[in-house]
Structures are given as structure tokens and as C-alpha cells.
Image (spheres, one colour):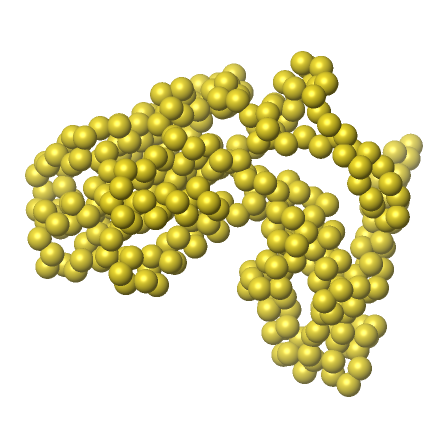
Length: 347
């Protein structure tokens, strides 16, 4: 992510940098990006000493906003993190200075929208106002926690960098509806090839059509949104990216399944073509992103896990799954789904 890379570089060089809002569907990598920056800072002592980072779920901010303390609690988290980095004996002034130059990740920021449907969401309004106070003010009164001696100090929060991210569920549909009501004449058809068939599809990109007014309608206040220098819409993960994630990430079930089969005295192996077929199937669900990998792999592996010793491809303690096996299972699931759907319509 170039925007985050440039912002982080400026931040570590003590340069002024604008806040960033990330918009991407579930599984597109928003939280992964945040974790990657946290891990980079934690693993590099020279960088860790130059920035304090905290990550907060927006729902927590909403709950704290109802108590009127969202901004204070967020600053307390930064103070605690800065103290952990500098040590318990560090002078309070140094801890406060470090915290006031911190990096704040807010996940699922769309959860603090000002309204949901026709209903006003008071906690969302208050949370946005609390963040707005921290983003734009140079003198924020802060009640110190007990470990810092209590009392009230003035904190300059204008040097904080906020990177907020959310899936903004329903935004894609709302923008698409707006475009289509306007005629949709500018939407371009793209020629695609699938299973040997050539067809034309109309591709709609949220990045190309999103306007600030769409986010206002969604429930992000103009005052809050105006404090972000960059609004970045993440692209859906490509098949190649999904394949890389499936092959390299420990979070998509392959490692756990191999451990399960090993406990039964079997060695699980997937061919590269099988992995590619799983990634290709996951890519057909772009709104699910990397989460689609888990769903597709679960469909493929569950029959093998239920009765591994009777599985096709088992020979001499080695269970091999190739592309043909994946194709067979996915085709069977598709046929079962079609049959089930037809059954629903039976009188």
C-alpha cells in the first residue's frame, strides 16, 4: 500500500503527514496492513523508538463515547504504550511527548457512522466528534491515569497520525444504484473468458465512482471526513494475490489440516495446480477477499478429514490432492446446491 508506506516514512522522519481512510470489502487486507506496520515497528528497535502505535476497534470508541471519554481513553492507550516502550522510569514529560506523536489505527471505522438507515446513532456521532477533537486540536486537556500521578495536562494532539479503515457494508450497492439511476452510460463492458466461453461483463469499480457525498450519506460527517487527506479504496484481491496468501499464510487452514492428518499418520500434500484452482474459485467471490480462501478450502478438505483412510489419492501414507480432485469436489457442491435450490421451489 503506497499511501501507507509514504505516510509511515514521513511519520518516522517527524514530518507532517495527513490522515488516511481505507475503504475495502471484508477480507481485502485492511487489518492485515495495520498489523504489518505494527509488526514492522515492533521488530525494528530503531523504528520502534521513533513511533508509538496503537490499534483500536471503532466499536470500543463508540462505547466509550457514550460515556463521554472516547478521546481520553485513546490518549491513555497511547500513554501506556509509550511507557511500555520507554520503560517505567522514563520521565512523564518524555512519555507524553512520545504519545502525542503516536500512530493510531482505528479498525471498522464505519461502525461509528452517525446513522444506520433512518435511525440516528448517537454513539457514532460522539465518537466522530471525539476523534475530530484529537485530530485538529493543539491543546487537549487530559486527565492523567493514576500511574502517571493523576492531575490534568495539556496534550498537543495535532501530530498524531490516524489511519482508519472499514468495510463500509452497503456502500458499494448504494453507489452502484446511484450510477445506474443516472443511466450508467459510462460503465464499460469488458470481454472475459471463462471455461472456454467468451462473454462481456459490465465491471463496476467503487474507486472510480465514489464521491464524498456518498460517504456523507453513509453517515460520516463532513467535518470528520475533511480531516483525511487521502481516501483510499482497496481493490479486490487478484487470483495471483489469493494464491500467494494461500501458499504463504498460516491462517487459511492448510497448516492445521496437515497437522490433523499427521496425527493420523498421514502426510497431506496439495499440488500447485490444486492450490491455483482453489485460488481461482475464491477469486470468483471478490467481495469476500481472502476469507473466500477459507471457505473454498473448507469445502475441498472436509470430505477428506471425515474419512481420510478411504480418500482417493491416498497411497503409502501420503494423501495427494490435485486440481482434478478440487474440480470434482467443487462441481459436486455446485450440483448439490442447484438440486437443493430446486427443492425449495417444489410445492
